[in-house]
Length: 229
Image (tube, rainbow, N blue to C red):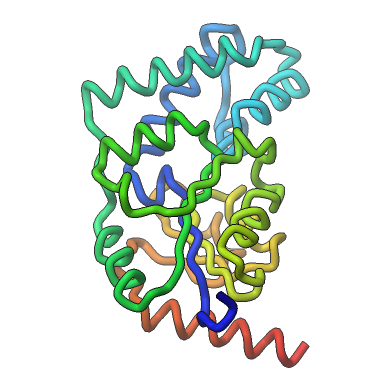
């Protein structure tokens, strides 16, 4: 598939789905059940992380030991309860961009730190379940952003070299993971301020600002830089 100019890897919460605040609320409420009160730095550090990585962080930074399966179950329960009250929606520009990639036969995938059941739940809730052929869960894979493992694994499934992969992210950890993987990164300001996302190759306020042509230009620029280095 290397004759294709590039491939796109989408994060899920905060990129495809307007669900990041719901996810954060469920995370904060679940942690509160077990004791520690989180501050802003804690939230930034754990946005885009797997449940396993979150529990490692809580043990290290707060001395709080929480059983993994119980934490995962309670957090997903709280997330589903909130979605039942306020259904999540797809961000503007998502279906248009996916359609443009399909029209141009550009491969794309979903790579999220979330658990498989949450990813599947969101896809069915928003009607996107049949649009993604490749779906990677960091929780199932056992790797958590900012480690690049989830993106490297996704690139292998896409059968694309890393310098031909373009990642769309919304979190600081996600941007760091994409850059560590040697990929071009577009960050969207749905969750963090653009100053926090400054290490991305491009920062946009909406996926409406993206098009096949703009992504193609970014990909070609990256390939030219790779050839010169």
